[in-house]
Image (cartoon, helix red, strand yellow):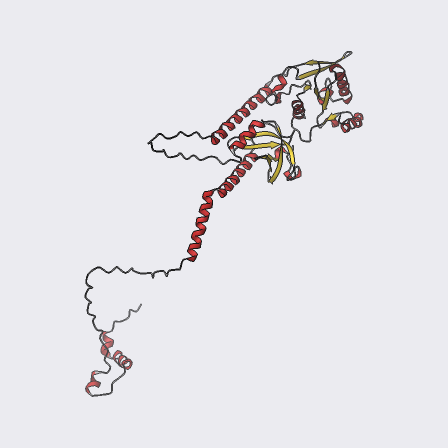
Length: 401
């Protein structure tokens, strides 16, 4: 059997028949595989903890092989003990995986493992050496769960395409001749982070689990926003390391182009979740941080669209013109508060009512007038009249408490 590229699960072969891995056993298996399977390009992948589990005497040689590129380790914090990293390499190069593991938790994401000749097993037979045979992955409970989650994720993708297509293509029927046009039905569309056509194009070109290159645009409190062409995606902190870092600024740099993996989609808001290769888990369900960030992105996009719309510009221009006209108009005096005067009725004006003359105070007492005495001033006459006993008796008395 020959293949163009073979990806070796080094941690699995080094532990075959043993409790702890052995670097010498791994080198023996790879050398015999090269002799039996012919001239094939070989990539040996070991997990991040491999160097700490082998014998101390083998660690210097391991460092030499790692420095020469003979062994490859996944980045720190990779999920699945490096299995996701190994399968991603095999999928990218369309190679054969040499391992005794069935990778059950990845059956939904990598159905190509069940293709004939894509998975090889290796067994060390005493006195004979290593035997390599084609095998098929074992289906178990974890495999069933992984397949169901992958099917659910595919349904979400199909739903996302249907929703976005419906928003782009709105079929309308032409009204019949002479018929009145029916009033348009108003539907409240959800706030979305991306345009429908942009989202549909992205889904068609980049399936779940696929790798893309995105430009880091801006940071947030729980991750970063990356741009893939016209589409804006979100990278949560959980997709940058395990455990997640405190800030995305320690992993990414603003304005740089990095390679990410599409881990989930949000069809309702047309959002996309990304993660670093080997870190994020492709589940199809966006995390809570991603949902909150996509909602914020959708609101910002709706606010920008409303600010750029012609109706808002016309309203702004109208309000500005009204304010200028109001300032230029002369101010009118406000009417005095009180009862409004009635409009005069038609016809001759009403006759004026005679006004009763107010009684005047005598300027002098009767006795003084009869005696021909001197005339007094009005103030003096009023004072004398008030001091008269008759006037005091007739005056109303003040109430005393």
